[in-house]
Picture 1 (cartoon, rainbow, N blue to C red):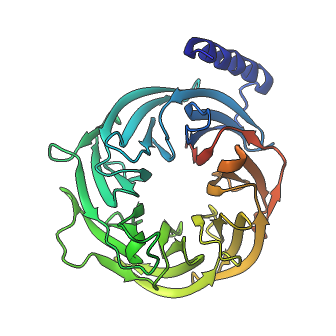
Picture 2: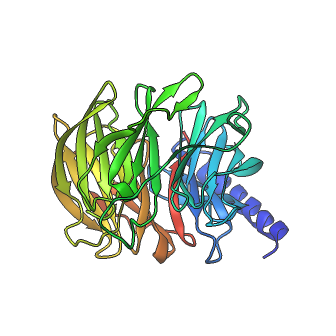
Picture 3: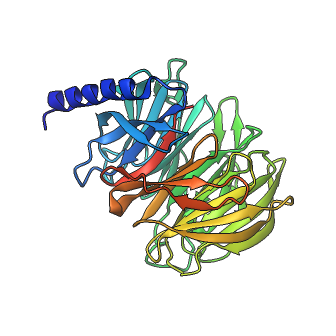
Length: 370
């Protein structure tokens, strides 16, 4: 289908959706990132109805492997996940009236296969998996990205040392997050089984410390995604290789381990993502490769985790996200070419498959526009 015909089709669908929905306030915008090796255009925008769980496609943007995207104050930032010099981070202006994207800039990611982005509104961080680097960019007041000090800046390079010689043989940085107090950046050093810490300064991200280790995890852990609790008191990391989640107490930049729980009873060595419900009472972890699904935990008052249930999903649940009101969990099942829509019980934390699947080729990221 030509680009013109495709946009005419999206425009027609948009008008029909307006008429059907009556511009109801129950609908919020949603961004979906995909891999483009299976017929996907790239980035997609949807309306998601937080009352019914139904979704309606609005528009798309041609992009190569935008496997991770985030929204911030009118702008969408997306990776170009490729293992070559074309690997990059792009910025788009997002129109909330019609769901359209307008490319406003693109810069090299300073490392191959960028796979995760985070921002504090001033700096944008790119975690580059194959490149094994953590890159930092500045954000202009208009949302455009710019290089720090005249060029793409890799503030850190991961290391090796883990025992899995097939998956930890080269450095991998998989995720980076800003601490709730805004003073630090934490990153997962996958191949060294450790969590890195950097101080946020007025000039950028400080990488001058000789020891950047915030916490040394157990061997063969393979730390992947990181998340802070909504109240800022606790910090959690999921091990892709270990299939476990480690809980920490966070205070003034220091991490104190509370405990470790098993998130993947099938030992698939493919644990992926973690998210916490908006009320801070439940944590969810996705597992791939064997018996794909999402593990549900309750979060106790001391930040420790208690297993509740395993929820089966379709194939390869790499990324998922919880709706801002906490009523739904949307799981991007890459190899089933769909986003599974689960309703979430606010009291028990348990999930129910609604059957309202969103068909899209190779989805790997779900992001809410707030």
